[in-house]
Length: 86
Image (cartoon, rainbow, N blue to C red; front, side, top):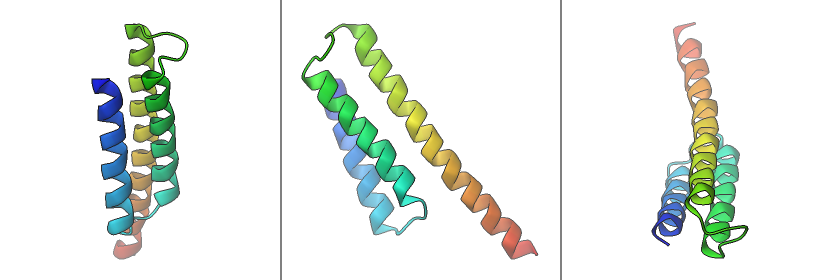
């Protein structure tokens, strides 16, 4: 239950900050948050199994998708920096 609570709190903070700060690529952030919410519900319902490997898989998936969203943001920042130099 603690892992599920961690995922839902992290999603709420991430979506709130992305929209409040009007960051670019909010779609990527929203998509990764949607996947995190799905994983949270799967853990809470103990779908498939309630064992540790499934919770670990959910956390690793959430980390990977969040990393993808951060990479798109970093690439956007990189293009902004080269636009300022030129």
